Image (cartoon, rainbow, N blue to C red):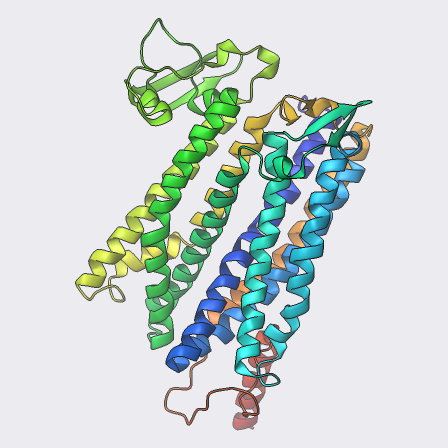
Length: 478
């Protein structure tokens, strides 16, 4: 069907499931740190706005965390079901790294998550804040181990091959492989930026609907400060990551740039737009800027970038896909930087919360960070092809011996179940976002600390609250 084989369906299935999964950890990483900051600010200033925002976003964090755990379990099982030959070849490296993630990050998160979500009125302030910080640290530790495993597949070292299997010889070299520091920083920063625009979009939606209060304004303000500061930093990290990729995976860079051949000693141009054709071995309709490719990729005006034709056809990534996925990521990155700069200009004019054109931009930029993460992930993973472990094992040699029919059935089942299950979860999470943070303006309030009467934040309380409001309205009518 459509010229696809069982291997192609296995790759599509993995790409589909990881595309769902990666969105949840990204928001989890950002929200965990955001919650730690909110609670810390509340403890320091006593401003109830931070407390109200903490309760609001902790509910969304809980739903997102749960969906991330469930979708992550599926990813682990696929290594054994669809990629058993890869597990047999490299499991001695990837297995322990994923185990370290469970033993450190997951146990840390699980140990303190209950206190964080349900212990607001049951433990002291310092212990509760400590629990929130531990959960935030746990998400970053999880990122550390996952990226260590994936980065080793991109730039493997610290091993030897014995009887067709990878045998670790230097765990520090395996963990801190050449691409790991750049990819860790790039992914963690992307999670913070994605969360900032998610939070900012939520605030913009409420402001556009006329719901203007200190909590909503604080959400937008903090999100835009994050965008202003971190989005440009992400661009710098991306530049270093690109230089590292050029050194260790030059074919990936050539595919990303749609660069097929060098001419004499001419500098490499930057192809802004075009359509790389893998069969004709050229980029059609190319719009080029002379010298700029060399300047960006080598930081010089005369050095050349390796071209795709310098690599055998069977070793070339699919330039058609990564050329455009990379440009989607970069284009959204520039939009994020622009949004942050515009917010600064409006802040100085005291119109940040009232400029409707800006609020609409902030609203529509809500999913931009997540889309950029997906585009960057596609660029990284498809750009590594045809290797599953770069230079050591081809993807075609890593898959299990399943038939086309078997892979078709499981892929269809995954699509149906994922859209039903996670679609409902995302719908519920958006319902929580639309409710907005509850504030106690005009009412007698307390600090919500231990022994106080304030209702603890219940992660799955939106439906109950709506039902209670509905019951009260019916009672009044009767």
